Length: 270
Ligand SMILES: C[S@@+](CC[C@H](N)C(=O)[O-])C[C@H]1O[C@@H](n2cnc3c(N)ncnc32)[C@H](O)[C@@H]1O
Image (cartoon, rainbow, N blue to C red):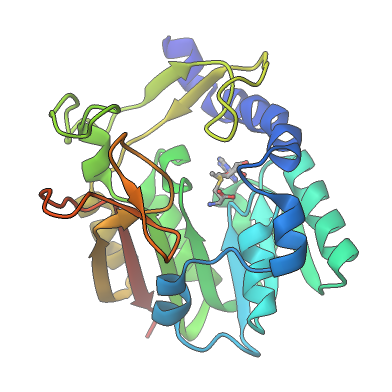
């Protein structure tokens, strides 16, 4: 187990590389729909980030670029970074196919400053299943700060760590330790996008960071937190009783006690 944790980057890279073609082909990411709509961003993200037109935006851990290219559709000049070669290749292919000007680089998130050769950006965007792959949040936040121009900002939208302490089925019983931020290992075939997919590289190492750790890392890197919003809905049916709203987000049924399922943060550089 310790050996696997020590090899987290290699293990996770193999896991992600294998899942890229599955995600490209499956219904979860709905590529045919994206080709038509060209926007998968959630309404609250577009509202909270503010005007992006004409601004440079770098998306860390961009997967195959759907969110990145969506920001381009809103007028941003976009760059994406991911450590997965197949993801970056697919992102470049998608951008070319759609005729969108976008840059995608293959690099570890911690190496982003070098990967972009010291260039800085107006906006750093990241989220929805990104931070869980990074062991060291203060180091990540320093990278974010170094990528930002003075006056630029980080916009982060993520799954709320509260959801990780509840049972997966009903989301009503506390089953996991909120404060355990140590490395965790899973070994499961398939992917969240296709549970039944046949896969060989099934081990992954991940970390469940508390909200306090995320905010403290951002503040510790010298960024000023403008807001931390907690949302009562989420982007997929996380628990069995969640109901889809007209906004495409899933929430608890009317009258059921609400819990935070996503959060978003905007934090600026002086
Ligand atoms: C769930 S996706 C997040 C992107 C977006 N929310 C989505 O769902 O398409 C996680 C991405 O993080 C990337 N990733 C994981 N660890 C990384 C690391 N250390 N450096 C760079 N990218 C990494 C994976 O390759 C994957 O594309």
